[in-house]
Image (cartoon, rainbow, N blue to C red; front, side, top):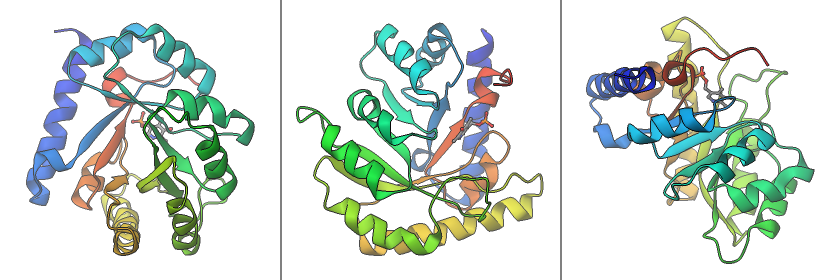
Amino acid sequence: MPKIADNLEAVYQRIGKACEKAGRQRDEVQLLAVSKTRSASEVLEAYDYGCRDFGENYLQDALEKITEIKPTDIHWHFIGHLQSNKTRQVAEHFQWMHTVDRLKIAQRLNDQRPAQLPPLNICLQVNISGEDSKAGIDATELLPLAAKIESLEQLQLRGLMVIPAASQEVEQQRRAFAESRQLFSTLQAQHPQVDTLSMGMSGDLDSAILEGSTMVRIGTDIFGARAQR
Ligand SMILES: *Cc1c(COP(=O)(O)O)cnc(C)c1O
């Protein structure tokens, strides 16, 4: 079997096992294949093995792939840092944006989303471990920002995205994810349509699923280690 298909099979198994352990249905957790720095042909290999959702961090790199890749049933997710002068390309070419952390970005995405497209799906990024180096809002800013975004017609608020401080310790991983889940419940209480808790990467997807993740973002374990960038 080709390598990416092999890796994907292992990832699907891992997700299945974690769901079982958590007492959750397998279809409660979606796989987002993180294809940043990967070629169009690698994306297509994953596509042939069932992936329909792909995450990208670098806009230029992503736009080239989106243009080159033919199947139209792919959902592209922007998961990187976005400068406000680059919002138009995301509004025009992506279906999801996971890293909204200020109103200005949301407003621009809303204004630039083409009218003939469905609303852009939005996750708010929360800096759950409070690291200075990480993007994302404080937990206290979540509800006020969500309320403002709710009124933007061309955006659909879908949930939360977090990247906790990296840790090898399962207990520590789970603590940060459990906090994220609580915050997610608070958001859902105000916005019942919210259904997405985007958390978990190659190193901590099992912990994330145990704590309620609905979308894991996996790069390395599907495509192999990335070159430094
Ligand atoms: C790169 C990246 C991932 C994937 O990380 P892996 O450790 O390669 O699985 C997930 N989320 C975000 C935001 C990323 O930038």
